[in-house]
Image (cartoon, rainbow over all chains, first blue to last red; front, side):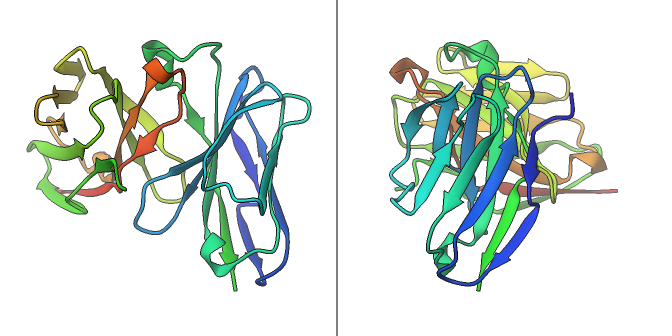
Length: 119
Length: 114
């Protein structure tokens, strides 16, 4: 068990370019979450998957953002036509559960994140 | 609309003393609350949680208290240790709405000095 891996750790891109981030969850985990954290703020929910199904999306996830988990394992988060306001830490987390419950809710395991800087 | 608020951005405590981190929320429908700790360059790690039907949960040096009428919770760390120095996030969820997304506060940076 190597934990949740995110790649790359850092990404600097020019405004208007597209970027894609990858998240590899803990292998047996069926739920995968994406959060975004900007400076001075807590993590903000973006979306989550159960296996390959995207169950919920935040209104923060504009049409420039798309997340996929095609085979129910790794996930990608793509941002098209990046803007300076997209600069943030993008966090991925995973968990193993079929239904949310108190004993498992704290079982999110976060990765170390991908820091995106749009210049 | 910040539904979970941590009004103290930082806290400094001497080693061995009690650290008290506070969190306020506005949505009375929240039914589960969690605390996460975050070190630099790492993702948040789960610390302790409490259901809205309880008013206290204890795990070793960490105790979380919930005051539903005041929509307030606090995390007590006793005794504080230098390794506790980190950013602490309060988070809330709406399990009864069949979602396990978390709504985080803005965090409090705790520094424990010798």
